[in-house]
Every structure is written in C-alpha cells, then in structure tokens.
Length: 220
Image (cartoon, rainbow, N blue to C red; front, top):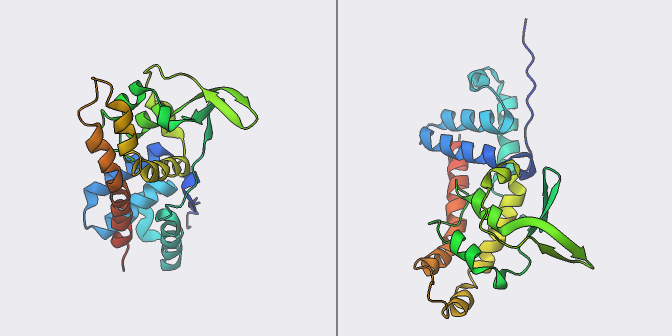
C-alpha cells in the first residue's frame, strides 16, 4: 500500500523565514558539487520534505517542485517594506537614514559585511524599531539605545529581508561621501566605516552567487 505524502512548495520569498534561509545557506555549503545533495537540501528546508523520500518521487513531480522553487529564487526586485509586525508589535524602518544616530552607524559597521548572513538579523534590529507615533503618513520610532535583539527578526520572511537589503544596496552606494562628510567632525570616526560602505556594492554579487549555485546544482 502506497503512502501518500503531502508536500507544500513555497512559490515566493514570503513563505520562507530568515531562520530557514540561514539554515539552508549553511547546509548548501556542505554539498559542494553534489547535485542530488543540493536538491535534497532545498526540498528539506523549503518544503519540509524528508530527504530520504526524494528518490521515490516520480520524474514529473520532481521537475514540478524544482521549477516552482527556481521560479522565485532569483527574484531580487522586492519592494522595501517600511513597516513590519512582529509578535503584535509594529516596527518601522529608520525614517531618516541620513540622520541616523551615530551609535546606530557605529554598531552596523562592527560587522565586516552588509549582506544576509548570521549578522543580518542584528542589523535589521538596528534599522527597524517599534513605532511610537504616526500622523498624516509620517511616523516616528523608538530612539536607538544600542539594544540589539536579532532573534525576533529570524521569524520575519525573506521578502522583507531581501527588500531591505537591496534598498540599502542602492542607497549606500550613493551615501559614502555624504555619511563620511557628516562624520568627519567626530573624532571617534569608526576606522572601518569607509570600507564597510564601499563593500555595499559587493552585496548583489554575493547574493547572486548563492542563487547561481542553487541553479547550477539543478542543471540536468
């Protein structure tokens, strides 16, 4: 008697949390050029599918799942979401990046890269803070106090994270000179802020590299 297995296949980034995405990244590095390993890893993390059953799939089902997953993996044209809700609390993106607290810049630049990795949730915790006031399309968020809590952003879906990432890629590529000029009057200028901002131009290739590896692993 055949056992019926229900497989839920995500069709866009809104179905995948940051926690799942990071776990996928870690495991994909293990498989290298192992095509079957890549496919099994993707199905396990993104579909909740037991890798041991992959060989039992008929060819049509396997191809359909693969196509559904690859159809959105390279989608990087995701909009920035100014507001997100976590555990019933409304968070807003820093409304004036050009006037962000110096401490926030300092904390962001402690990380060597500005991309979606193990530190990304902490960066999001700096950029998104609880909304305190809204009026006529404008809003205010809590003052930055240096309280970094990235864990709560692990449950936020990847459409939000990718939207924020690529917004800042475009923004930061034009901001280094402005930010550096405004900070030059401060003696405590972080030594690595220029290199961090310059690295913002490398974010797209870094993410595209992961997506390329996924797609390359599925070539048949």
